[in-house]
Image (cartoon, one colour):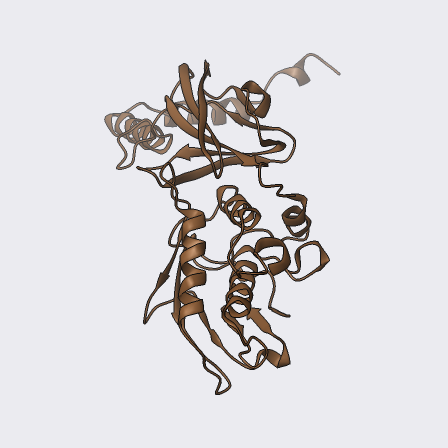
Amino acid sequence: MGIDNMKPGRDALKESRISVRNFRITPVTILGCLALAVLIWLGTGCGKHDNPITPPIPPGPVTVNATFYNHTQGAITSKVYSGISGQPLVIKISDIYAPNVDSQRIAVRNAGSGSSLGALVGFSRNGEVSTAYPNNNADYDVFLMNTSAGAIYQLIDEWVDKGGGILQCSPDVKWRREDSDGYTGPEAPIDDAMSQLNNALNHSWKKYGSFTHVSSVFHIGVGYGYCNGWVGMHSATWAGVNPNFCKDYPFKLRIFLEEIFELQTNTDDLGGEDTNFTICNTSTGNLNAVGRDFLAYVYVKDSKAPGSGSSSKFSFSFH
């Protein structure tokens, strides 16, 4: 290639001079660039917003004051855990000396208002709950399961492993009298059953829940019915007794206790036999100590908040 051919032609030089001459900095150009810069600045979040982003709370030292309870016998002791917010916190049964409690099952909750239960932090069946230190100092309630009455919690956990063993209704159950199929019977064993269930949930140190008789808006109906020809029956919203089979008062009482217990705890036939043989005194019909331990166990480990609705797992059961 010759040297002359490497020089730009006259037309190319002319076009270059025209391009440079046309790109002039004017006041309009300056204002346009400033406007574009402002738009970019606003779009990247540097400008003022109606809902400014709150920066995260930086990690810092916090303390958790944990009160340990035997879940049906009362407070055992307390322990303070110190750490950095957001860092792992492990609360173990073995952190304290606690006789007459199950060595594996532990429920940790935020301390509730007054004597009520707070929100569930965690539950496990391996002797400890792993969580994280909260952002601020906090009070926790730690529930260990009573064994002095001989409760075998595996009978409940067999249902937990099937998706049951949890509260069917709100911890604060609203019930009303509902008979069906033209059957009826005395009110006394129903009221007695509800009173005993309430007593099992309400202690001087904590109140786990309640069963309240209402006339309108309710969670479950309780009464007498044909029960498909069985002595008792429960569905997700009804528990009943067949008065043709349950003649005497103690029999009526323990079948009502069984059906209401199974409905609310999403269980059935504990240990493969009628639940009333496990949770009731078969002579008096009353809820026994194991029944009280089992009921409170389901409550303290459950995540359902007071006032919440049902979480049906099982449709119906006959006995």
